[in-house]
Amino acid sequence: MMKIKMRDKLRKWREENFRNSEQIVDVGEELINEHASKLGDDIWIIYEQVMIAALDCSRDDLAWSCLQELKRQFPDSHRVKRLAGMRLEALERYEDANKLYDSILQDDPTNTAARKRKISILRAQGKSSEAIRELNEYLEQFVGDQEAWHELSELYINEHDYAKAAFCLEELMMTNPHNHLYCEQYGEVKYTQGGLENLELARKYFAQALKLNNRNMRALFGLYMSASHVAASPKVSAKVKKDNVKYAAWAASQISRAYQVRRVREENVKCSAHGITKAVYTVAMVHNVNIIHL
Amino acid sequence: MAHLLLDSSIRLWVVLPIVFITFFVGILRHYVTQLIHNDKKVDLQQVSDSQVLLRSRILRENGKYLPKQSFAMRKHYFNNPETGFFKKVKRKVIPKNPMTDPSTLTDMMKGNLTNVLPMILIGGWINWAFSGFVTTKVPFPLTLRFKPMLQRGIELISLDASWVSSASWYFLNVFGLRSMYTLILGQDNAADQSRIMQDQMTGAAMAMPPDPNKAFKSEWEALEIVEHKWALENVEEELMCQDLNFRGLFS
View 1 (cartoon, rainbow over the protein chains, first blue to last red):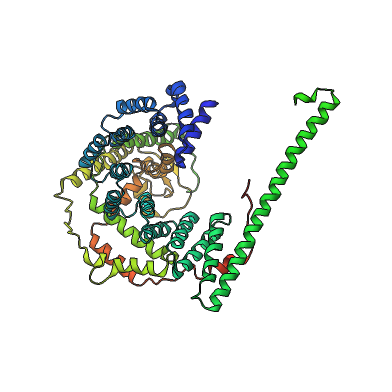
View 2 (cartoon, rainbow over the protein chains, first blue to last red):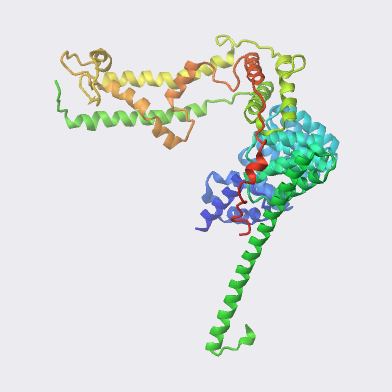
């Protein structure tokens, strides 16, 4: 049943927060146009999902029609107002969008979505220092918002303020201790900051990222680089230098192992492709087919 | 008196109707509660405070994954004697008197209306309509103390206390159909009476304890005694014990 498969695909993308907007628009548009009546109450959340994806692909017609349907069904909803504001943002009518968000906030001061959209407007307009300031104020009140911490760390990295970016990443690591990507990003920021202590910290966090996920190649390279830098630094004691040389050597051996695994796999793939072509040729020869056209 | 043979029409006309009545009244209650329910207005400061407390708790639990200095910085932010958050911030607490505060009063009234009133009404009706005979037998033996409670309307001294009347079957259903409601109405449904009774017993079931100052003080104490034991002390040695597992890396 095509309809059920499409609906399940959309639900999976929605729940795992994928941003494959073109696919969502393709699947969602077909679902809405053909099967709107049979979806029941699911259709509203699908409208929201498709509308955001349509804004990403600058399909303003589709976004407008989705918004109309939602406005008709939920006339006073803050959630729908936020979607209307996002559409205004996509059309670069930032003043109108700001006014809309302010009206939402007047009604409900705890609405986090409207505040975050205002900050993204500032970022879209390129006013990063103001965006940083607003985001800091937002985070003072809503300390638990992880999306916001991540956004702030990105803003600080763009401004080359690595100390503050490290602070934001520490918050994220604290709340998600088993996420190897945060450990790896923190290691990278520490490595960029430089200095012996930071390099040692970077090395530790790259190792932690590898421990959490053995296949994180970036962390493996990071481990190698930070260990070699520490070993090459003139200020370290002999024991520390020896340890770091050992770490770097181990990392290098793991990297070459990874490349070997890749080479073996590629050869296998090539072998099987080669085998198929050979089999086709043999069959063609047996049946006297003109193989020039193959 | 061990064995009684009950008329099978009791099963058909008493046991099953009581089950259906309880079930449908429960579903009706759920929808009525949803209709007259109004959203609780959340206070910005309450939300903010609850998130701060959550952050402090996470710091206690997962602080060992942070570098020593970062942990110390955050602990200092919370617990510093002069400028620490838990020391400095005192929230003005207005004790909400449930009798005079209008919003809690209406909430209480609505709760009573939708939950207690139907239970009393239907319990009384069942007691009146289905009285004078034994309905069912509970599978475990009961003491004589339970007789007046469970055998309303049956005045037999020699009858085993395990034989109960229809009123007790009704109450058994009210609590027993809870899992059925979860199956049909989803979690957190308003037909779940026992949970509501629990809420009433434990006091105000709000997102924040009514006294944030007390919560801050207890969090301060908990944070004071936590020490930083870095989980990453020997991470490289632990990592290098064995080769990395690259399965699935290039698939």
